[in-house]
Length: 190
Image (cartoon, rainbow, N blue to C red; front, side, top):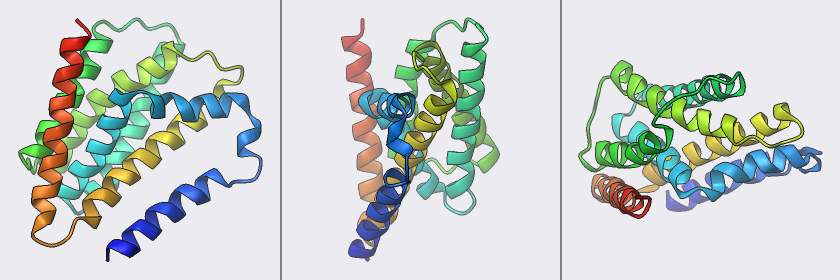
């Protein structure tokens, strides 16, 4: 089982990265790199995947899809000049919030989980939009959307690869670690 999960995750990442011509666009590379270099983005996106595994069922695709679509709305809002207050505090709080949802194994209804994720994703997308310095915004958007989807898939794969009775403990521990790192980042950023 563990080998299958590892192979699945590796194949998914390699399939995405080996698309013909994808690395030719500087904007695309910037889009890929931006979410991967920010610990805040990485932690939240993986935690969304972990939470989707805990909730189970349709949440496995609804939570990531909600994040992706609302993140794009936040990006569009920033691109059109919409100024949103408290972006950084909300992003840092989102690490703690989603980490705690996983650590406490909160099995919210899918609609409520989607609302929580949408709120968080809008702010993450807004940051992408305000920090977009890419020559081609379309390539940049494709890059950061793809990186986000990969991080969600990593979270789901991590959650699915946990074995038997240790699964719940492993998921909750990862959520707790994410929340602790989020708290540390909040303290450091002051």
